[in-house]
Image (cartoon, rainbow, N blue to C red; front, side):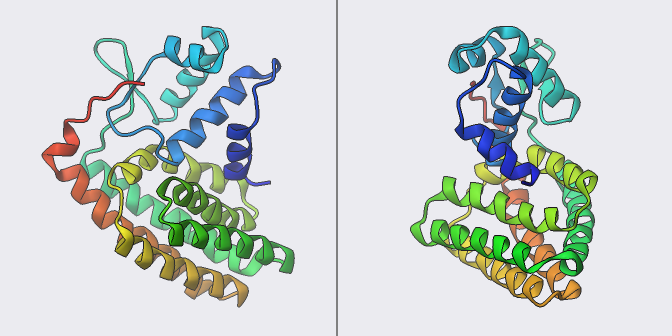
Amino acid sequence: MDLFSETQAAGDRPLRRDSLQQQIYDKLRLRLITGAYQPADTISSRGLAAELGVSAMPVREALTRLTAEGALELTSSRTLRLPLLSTGDFDEITAIRIDLEGRAASRAATEATPAGVDDIRRAHEVLRDAAEAGDVDAYLVANAAFHSRIYATAGWPRLLEMIQRLWMIVGPSIRASLPDQTHVANSMQFHDAALIAISAHDQTALRQAITDDIQTAATDIRAFLGAEGGKSLTRSK
């Protein structure tokens, strides 16, 4: 099971008493990746502990870890907040994502087994169903899972981990800049191309499909980040 899928599974099952910090981290990681939180949201360790029905200590440990990874930031008032990316920050992340995800895609095209391709095809079906239903939340979860299965096929867990950290940082902005149905349809054409490419073990085509998907989405996300309205988000969690 790949890292995104592990996170998704962790988000659905009840907490166990062992390894609470890791379980809480996994739940928050999924929320960040799929945009359950938005840029500039603040997170209260006390409120989160109450929500999850656990003590504050493992929650603080998980939040500290996410802060160290750049998914959260400590404000001057000592509250934890999701960063509101500047357009410059976003451009940097986008460029790095294209490099890392493109590399993972290229390697995945040569490493994919028939079983692996079937797994990616099933993830694609879930993604298409969510897109056709217009279910944005389900679409974002399915989108993360689809990309993750491709990147996991590369067989380089450290590369997948680096990709995942970038998704945690940019995920809230993706959800906040919610694309319309036209954008989702455009994105699906790149997902369709990605499935065809990995089925054919075509490195060039798969890398291009992933790059096109990232760059197309980046246009809407960057517009949101540059708008004054986006900068005023101040919701709390």
